[in-house]
Length: 427
Image 1 (tube, rainbow, N blue to C red):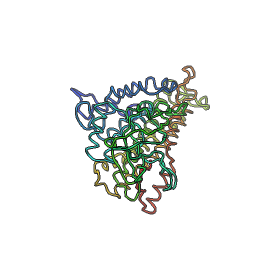
Image 2: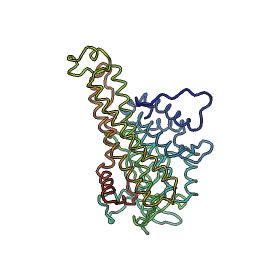
Image 3: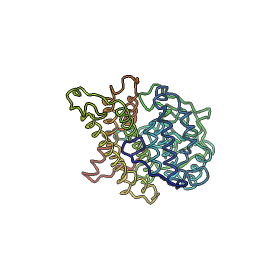
Image 4: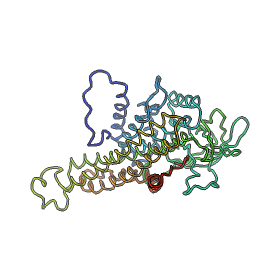
């Protein structure tokens, strides 16, 4: 578990300069500690995350998944997921912002050529870009999906490129992104195109979301595209809109994003649990039956057996979620390395593992963030509002983005009937 978790062992002393594989955990831990200091204040203010993005850039985290080289991370998806999880434990809004950026960084790998992928990833690193957007197909979100649903964004051929029209809601990055990665249907062929768009173009209008229940610092909102020119060199890739012709590898794009968001949810749970532990240690709550407890329990800080039982249940829930997330992360990492050689069966196995991680972690995050409100309700009445409601609010908003019922149904259908989850660009 990340550093803020009570179950993470202390790192052994290290002599000499850190090894390459130790740099990112150390950088991430330092940034997470920094974000945790004023997380509550920033959540209450609800301002666009410009300052937080500056901290991410200073730490070099946006370039984590880019090709190796000066100012480039050259790391892998396992490391990226660990970074997301630790940042989310400190500030889940910034964790989600980073999670979506990482998934979008690989858009050209999923939908385009190696040349397109290399060009995008190098620009992300060299120009310190933060990506936001959605390469998937929100119009297919209906259950069951309907082929007649009109796309919300279209790319119309115009001259040597395209014109982008439409309006879409985005869960992060509307106010701070350097570039937008958006999926849109070609108005002539119906094929799905993934485009790179400059949000400062006059045809791009942003409408930030205000007064969100949770995840207030992600920079969510709506964007309208009014005849925004997209030259052909800004098309990152294309795929058939017919799900029967989509490659298994391309459909890892929504799975990568879903798993990244699972790590955000796990980070929320672990961050909430660790902060509650620290508060309970400093001022343990005396439960209603405390006057009937034996003297050792009544006098020892944190000795209330009911409190210990509650924390034991919550720690077990966090461990359970982490245990389910780990094989999903490993499976996705292996699938990403296979590239276009990824088969339908391998993709199905990954989809089921991601669905399981999504369902279990979502339930655990809601259970933990709800229960800690009870455990800390009167822990320190003199210190004012400790702000634990933000963990619950953030977990509710994050998990509401996708129904757990969809994940559980896919798992059950695969287990009982051997049915493969559909090849889809749907999140």
